[in-house]
Length: 195
Image (tube, rainbow, N blue to C red):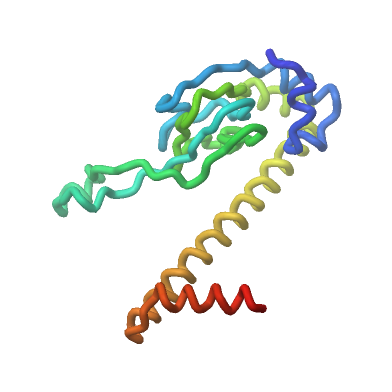
């Protein structure tokens, strides 16, 4: 069990009462992970969510390794070689794996791996779900919190994707016009500095 004060300091838990925070603390345990240690892998069934106390954790997604050819039958039966790509790096105070609070509790599209030596708090979601059944208000507040966190994460990822696609579209437009992209960027930066 960790100190309820450590939990209280995290904005994710801001809407909870002292007794709710104490219940969450009762389900917690601190673990140490080293670089390269997986906390969970894509597709694992999650029964904990996590808080980074110290260090860095990458959320990773397996994507098809385009350098390795695969046959039609491999693709059909999903026997495809994948490589892990970092989609987000989380530091002190960040929560992850909170989808474990919601059925079916699969880490369907991401995994988590330590980048640096890290201290991570694990929260037992099965024990928490029992507490939510006893105290519906507690369950409702946590559901609201998870929904808000999901909304904010989706907004962030959407903005990052749009930015990436816009940059690629700019490069494609410049390439199709036969314009020197680096010269175009240098000119654009110079104009912004003058303004």
